[in-house]
Amino acid sequence: MKLRPLAKLISSAVLAVGLVGGIRQAEAQSPYQASADFTKYAMKLRESAILHMEPQVVIPTTSRTLSVSGKYPWKTGIVTTVFWVGEPAGGNNPVHNFSSSWDLNWEQSYGGYDNPNPANRRNFIPANFVPRQNPFYIALPYNDVTHGTTKPESKVVIPWFKDAFVQEGTSVCHDRWICIRNSSGKVCYAQWSDCGPFRTDHWQYVFGNEKPRPNLNGGAGLDVSPAVRDFLQLGSTDVTDWKFVEVSDVPNGPWALYGENNHLVQNARRGQTRVVSNAPIPSSPSRSVPPPPVSAPGPAPTAPPPVQKAEGPTIIIHQAQ
Image (tube, rainbow, N blue to C red; front, side, top):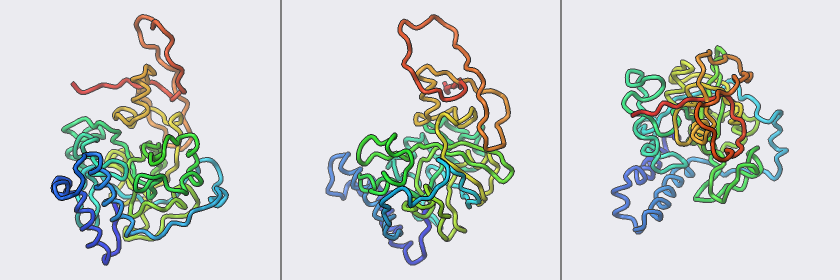
């Protein structure tokens, strides 16, 4: 998460977050002996550091307060910065990215350090390992859970809340898909994996019509991964448009190849094979028409497969040996 508070708050934030970054040292000193209890303890420290940087949230009483036209409208002209899994705290980034807002062990879950140096990357992934999560990821400045509970405004402001809600304290935003468009009209797709930059409470922007609030990074309202940066050829600070999309609207592309959290990979493993075509990725925001599905050879199954929602063209996944 990339949170850059005012200078007078940085020292206290770094102190609190440092407790989370030094998990092994803190675990020996904390009163929590069970692993599950310590995870809650460490995440609470991380949240406490963030909450000290944010004002009180106004909770809406009705979704009409959003005044949004269209289910998922474009957010245009958004200052966009780059972040990555494993980014250490330091400089303008007092909160490290070893953890995310939803995963205390994010770097471990991802499979390693997502090195942003282009010289250490190949085909939108790190050159030295295959990530276990989608390398096309982003952060937006809202978190729908805090201290293990669902925020009260979530059920009102999140358009898909009723369809996606599973249980109290489980995020309905984690791994949600968005479409990102650069200044030339080229589009990319990525999953929501962390919260930021700067804050985790700005639902009026993420789900409404507000612009990102002024901050120390030019009013940044979107963080993107090195893979998104490279695909869209973005600078370290750039301007993009973005919007939420359904999984069924995600076309074929490099964002569909890797990740245990990737819905397209999950569907392929359940038997809904998708083939990555060599056709160019559309540069306009309109949805491309997927090619017809390709039937995999082999004997017919003994029982009919479960019915799944159509998710676009087929993708063949090449696993590293």
